[in-house]
Each structure stands twice: as structure tokens, then as C-alpha cells.
Image (cartoon, rainbow, N blue to C red):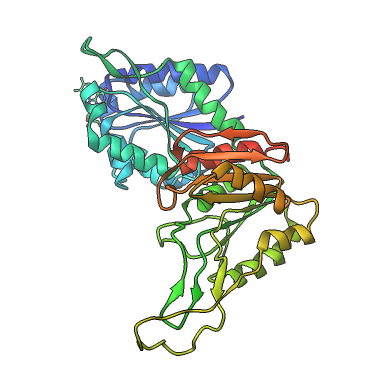
Length: 385
Ligand SMILES: Cc1cc2nc3c(=O)[nH]c(=O)nc-3n(C[C@H](O)[C@H](O)[C@H](O)COP(=O)(O)O)c2cc1C
């Protein structure tokens, strides 16, 4: 039985959360309600506790053996319905000043917002920027619908029907452990090849895609290991993380681990060339020009395929032109099972437009979505391989 937390905030549509609880209960889901202070102007803790047949959280400081935000870390999902303008903006700024925002700050489970508000609030660029930010770090949003709002104005901001909200959450709950038992090795970020002690050759890969893939694999029950090249300090991974700097280190770590995995996803941007003889002291500025001798780095994918004939390997292809053709060629040359073609505009961005091509030549084009959503869609393809 799934256990979910339903956060209710101070919106005129808060009464609809009671119906959401009823639909979940009918399906046998264990629901605990949590009301913000302002939600209690609209619905009472008594209604929520009665309908959920469970305790209700209405205050962070109610004395209890374990603080509520720690106690509730084992829920399978947090749904905030309705989600006000206020709570979305608060969470995106990392504010944790009441029971609901504190529980969200300490959560391990996926978090879904079902916004409901006046159409001008919905259009507010502060809110839209914060939604974009939250989506980029893995929060889910159920798009509000267009229709008659509380003041009878027509606009976007209406809460969808309870069944639609429950269906959205169920999809996340079902996919939540579908990679259990799988061992997935993911590489991410860029490598750096020393020219001298202060200079290096690298590329613009941010590592966001690889980290999103690793997090998605881990939250869906896989035993995920992430071999990370250089990335921004803000990226984190809760599973097994190995850091490397050079293409050679990346190759060594991958080859050391591939024997014990079911799926390898090579999303790291590994340098193709490295300085032939890096200088141990800083290269001085002499003369007008400067040329640097480079040698090719080892091809990690080829080396892995030679060693592991049956391993399911996913490669990435990034190109400025003929994206699909070049990706197909790479898929064939390196004997991959799946290749993900990535638009050149993607490095560093929070969103991407991926194209998946498999061995049979099937092509699946994803729309422009956050890298977290793209990672979930990639995981959908890996279930059952
Ligand atoms: C009658 C009334 C209805 C409201 N309805 C909404 C709403 O639908 N959506 C929303 O974002 N804010 C709404 N608000 C404003 C919020 O209640 C207010 O921003 C509050 O601080 C939200 O607190 P909370 O997010 O902690 O629950 C409403 C306020 C009033 C007085």
C-alpha cells in the first residue's frame, strides 16, 4: 500500500483536496493530511483527519517523539493540492517556516504541486520562473486548467478534477520502483586534460543530464553508480559517486565497474584529444604563435563493448549538423543498444530536446522538457531491458 502526504494550502479550492483524499482512500492509499495555517481558513483539520482516517498535521511544533519532518521521510509521495502562489515561491527559495514546507525540505519522496490560483497570479513571472526552477530540480507540476475561476473570470488557474490529479500521482508511484534490482552505471560531466599545471582542454558539458539520469535511476529503485567528471558544485547525487578528472581516469573507473552492471549510460563528455606531453611547469609566453601536439584519447565505449558483449549500453551523441545520421553511425560503429542524440544548444541548459534511436532504427523524439523529465522518460525505456 502506498503512503502519501497531502499538503493543503490556503486556496479557495482547498475543499477540493477533500475529494482528492476520498479518491485516494477508495483506491486503498494511506493518506496523511498536512494543512498550512492559512489552509485552515478554508478547510478544517477535523474534516481532513476524518476523511483520511489518519492523524492530521496542522502545526510543526505539536510535541511528538520524533519531529514530524523526520517521521514523514518514509512517505512514497508528497502531493500539495491545491498549491498556492505562496507555497510554490516559498519552496523554490528554500523556505521552511511551517510544517508543510519543513516536511518538503527534508523529503526523500517525489513532490507534486497541483497549483490553483487567480489567472494573474498564475501568469506572474516570479511564479513562472520559480516553477521552471523547481521542475529543473525534479519537482512535478500538474498544469492548472483554463475555465471559470473563483471570481467567475475565465482564465488559467483552475484545479483539474480529483481523478486527474490522482491519476498523475499514480503514474509516479507506479514508476517509482520499476528499476529495482537493476545495476546502472552512469557517467556525467566533462573531463579536463592538462596542458600544464594551470591550463587544460575541456568542453562545455554541465553534467546536469547525467546527474538527472543517475538520480532518476536511483529513485526508481536501481542500484545506481555515478562516475562524475568535472561539474558545477551545485550538482549532487545521493547514491554512489566517484569523481574523476581526465579521460584516462574515466576509462579506468568505467572498465573497473562494467563487469557488475546491467546497464551503462555514457553521458559524460569525454575529451577526444589530450596533450601529447603535458608540461610539468607553466608554459611561458614566447613568440607570436603556439602550437600544441595532441593525441587521441582511448575510446571508452569501444573498450567496454570489447569486454562486455551482452551489457546494455546507452551512448550520447552531440552534434552541430546531421544529428540523427551521425548518431545512427555512432550507434552502429560502437555497437550500442541505444543512442541519445542531444541538440547542441543543450550544454548548461535546464531543458533539452532528446532523440532516442535504438538498434532497430526506431526513433523517438522527446519534446523540450526539463532534464529531470527527460531522464524519467529515458528510464521508462530502460525498464525491462
Ligand atoms: C478568499 C481567499 C482566497 C484565496 N485563494 C487563493 C488561491 O486560490 N490561490 C492562491 O495562490 N492564493 C489564494 N489566496 C491567498 C493565500 O491564501 C495567501 O497567499 C496565503 O498567504 C497562502 O498561505 P499558504 O500558502 O501558507 O497556505 C486566497 C486568499 C483569500 C483571502
